[in-house]
Length: 302
Image 1 (cartoon, rainbow, N blue to C red):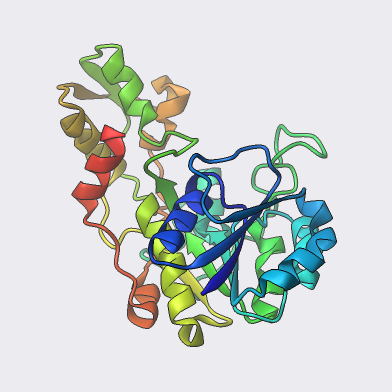
Image 2 (tube, rainbow, N blue to C red):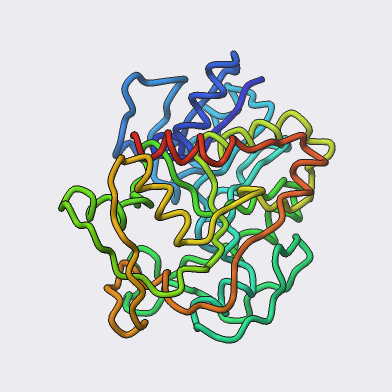
């Protein structure tokens, strides 16, 4: 297949490009040119997303069989790209943060969404979850996948709502809240109840879900899929698994929420879990995640 990838040089997009090339697909990557992976895989075109329309001739010459848009974050991102995409299958990367459960979690409110929830569960009423503390034009100010999904679904795209992606090249270093204490030699780590269930997703599984949607697009077109671990650990057990892989012994010491450092806030008394069901992706797309403990081991060792 000839796959056009928008945003394919960092983390999820980069790993997806690697897997596409590994299996023999021809890939054209459109990105800003700020980062170039080594080695460069596929053919690359450089343009800001706002200038995507200027690449029409090159994209027509490539004749893509399908498109992956890994970087549509705002309404402006949709307007800049979607009208100029060819009439081929499209896969859009979205996020489970569109769910009402995420809104309740952020507000530390009482649980109102049972888990695991499916793709029919209610969505957030409040918009722009990262706007607080930012200014117009600043990264994150206008971010909201709720502004992105509807137009892509209207085009028949497959929408993959990913969980909290972790693994090699993770810019957010998801395990860092534990590993920084390992490096510092800490033997006691303060935690709250640490019972929160989060929708984590190993990087290879995020990429393989894209391939699954492309390969079974007749099952994926116009559909939303949750993609995260089918089995998961509460935050406290996840921390202990990280410590075990790191070969470090530390006691998780229960403290009141008001004494928790900011980077350990997710161990506090949060009632609303965010675990989504990936059963639809498993049944309709044949997608299967990596064994949980193996995924944690690979990520921590990286």
